[in-house]
Length: 180
Figure 1 (cartoon, rainbow, N blue to C red):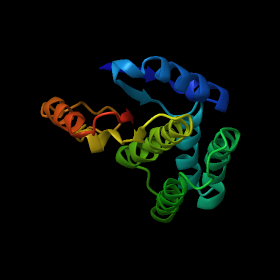
Figure 2: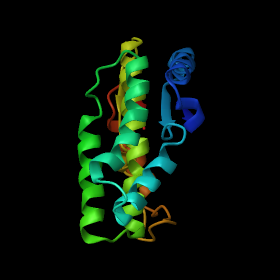
Figure 3: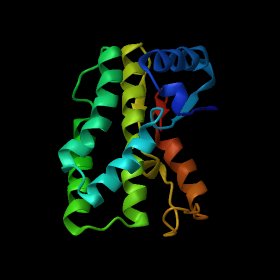
Figure 4: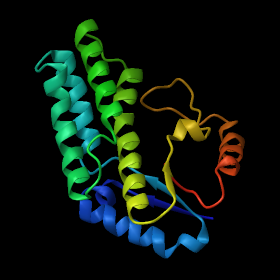
């Protein structure tokens, strides 16, 4: 197995995602396990969206729009179905609406909002990998056993995480390339 980690710039545009998948294809025989960051600039956009929701500078829908537009552009340029991350957009809009309603943005909520970047990126990269002929599937880190303490904003991995990850990885069907 080879772990291939791609930061935000590596998945920041359709062309970048295409290059990532070519690298994954070139390493297909080594059983790649692919880890992707949020698209370049998206984490900052998400955090700004949370602050805007808190300040009620914009509606939740308007606040989520810049994040959505950024992703839709990459999805469109990759020739993917527009709805592949619709659930995440809907959920993000609900979270931002909740922040604006209760007028509170905790470290826990901030971490949750920031998580949307990686969650959406992994789905986009996996969808393009499948379009390129790879047997890829998107996974969220928490679905593969990653557990952290409650120190939101600066959380530490809990000891049982490594065994949980090993067990989860073994349960992934042979030939599937996980995109996390």
